[in-house]
Length: 230
Image (tube, rainbow, N blue to C red):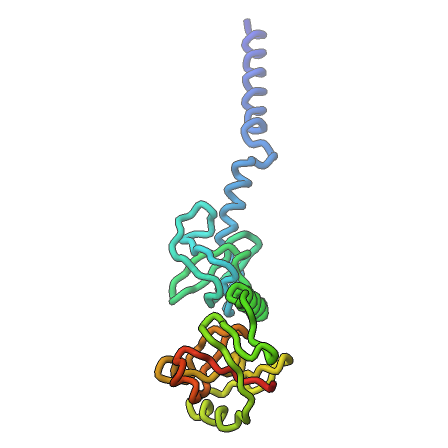
């Protein structure tokens, strides 16, 4: 009988001694690892520099993909980058408030924004480019997107001086095809009662700016006379 009792006591002691090794395994729990990684998303390396939105995006309340959107941010918006880490969402400040944005939607390089704006401008110009007949020296006149077009070749110093007096300081130059330009715009004469100086108009040679007028405007108030070196 005593032998059986000692045997039972030994077995019980062995079980109790072995139990901690079963309960407290040295292997990390996948659930614990996942929770730890999620917790790390909330730690950021401090920053304080301008950043720019490179595509329309949303700012979230916490750095989680499933978090509620708190603010809509348009492309090219400037924000302040205040925290970054090795995870998807970085911390930014907008109008004094803190949000978390997918770092793929951000850049701290203003040259990247300049390139995007240049591309956008080129695409807009392509989309708005006149697909019809184009004014030329040989044609003499043309029916363009804004009506009848003619051309003239006169000294432009006085016209440019008038535009300067109005506050326009864009460069005066002559395009390779002989069209006289003020900045990015074709210089045109128009009826100033309908299209005042500085108005932007569509021409067959590109977007124009009204800089001048002439006697033609009385006979045809919608006509444009385009300044050229022809």
